[in-house]
Length: 199
Image (cartoon, rainbow, N blue to C red):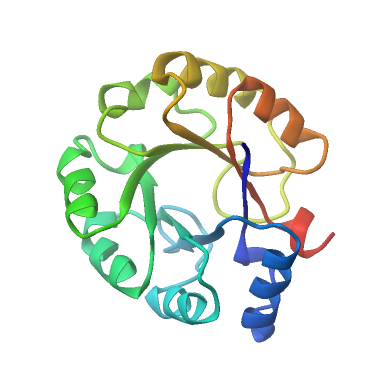
């Protein structure tokens, strides 16, 4: 079945606990946390404290997406704060395997992320070591962007290579229309920010 992971980037942070509970009552399966460092992407968002606050407010899994230049430096802090699944970008590490292993050793599920212009094949060598691939369907860094349909073929390519067991997540411009396209291509985890919290 499809897992829905609303992104707290689009919620009213002054009412974080209420917003998380509202998403849960609407059917959310996970909560997605977009972490940006102002370097890998131009925006700056959350640190481990917001993950800790979300963990106190909700028992659902916290899916933390590190859009940062140095994920190895901060992985442990986010896992200790409550991240159950930690994804980081293949574009920032030539060899992601040491960090993949460390994330798993720390008790979280590791995943890799690909930007829209990064080929699916960039993560193929590590598909057996990770629990999820996140396919960005917008350029990372800002909420509310339009879905990039060229990414659908990448999702299908990943699903063919990975088989049925790996979680394939999509993030960016997901709404009632685009969710069907991505699910048909093989995505089974859907991040929706603006379409959930601002819908």
